[in-house]
Length: 407
Figure: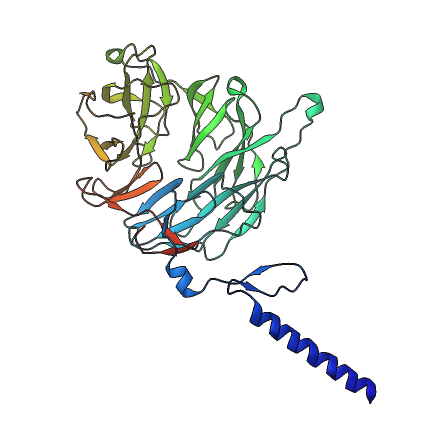
């Protein structure tokens, strides 16, 4: 009996001691489970209300259909279905807090995220997370191991790559290999089961892959760079073999002759457009040229020219998009809203001397000639009237939680 009484007294003392400690704790702390540790108490609603609203920097984005699109902030993935009025968190699980290497969505329900990870910033491994229900659930797949031996001079991977899918099943991704500008290279992988498994591709460009367009499960287009020069490569047999596409600079834009290739844009299985920015040098003007195809990209012809642009270097693209038959360029003098230049068929050679293009380009994604998004240095804007007016739709957060409050 005496032992039971002593035990009861000790328990009572412990309870009173814990209660006293809680009462003496500051409002922002709770007593930790581990002696010596400090546990931060969640902020009160009053404290949260006083916190600033922060605009989340947009790194990548895509308007998928009217009013529906996604943005990536680097390690968060957000979706809107009302043209940016509200944003929904759809980020895949990311226990290591890794930055995304690449994001691709085929539609609002079907998307993939390429993750790099390293514990020493030297030996990189990659995984692909896929969703088929708009981000409600995600499945993660490991990529095949990249085997190399530094002692024998073999090169490892770095944390860069890009991913693209032709449909819900067939996709390609690239991983960058260590090297300097002159020896930059990438390796290419493909999937035929929606990203659940990946295999090394049979062929690929001998260059660093910048972007991939999977037009069909057989037609794969790659913008790449090698030795400081840009190139466009294509496979018409599902990646079994690739060849370079060369589009000579029109004579009227000389001395601009060094191309930087963007990915082509196809309006259907056969018809499409390829935008190319040509640079000169030594202060020479640059130019942007749009080529067109009617046979799935097997042959190209000059369609429209935007000449007399500001000087640019190889690798610098005059940001544009093709919607229907309209070729839309963006520019925005610093501190102002985006401005658009639209070149329609039969525009011929257009003088862009006063456009300020190249000085402050904005990334573009358009659903129609009227409805589109522009990302200017991380600030996302929307237009529904072809650029006559713009609305800021950059996602915002307070205490890391999404909010509709203005920044």
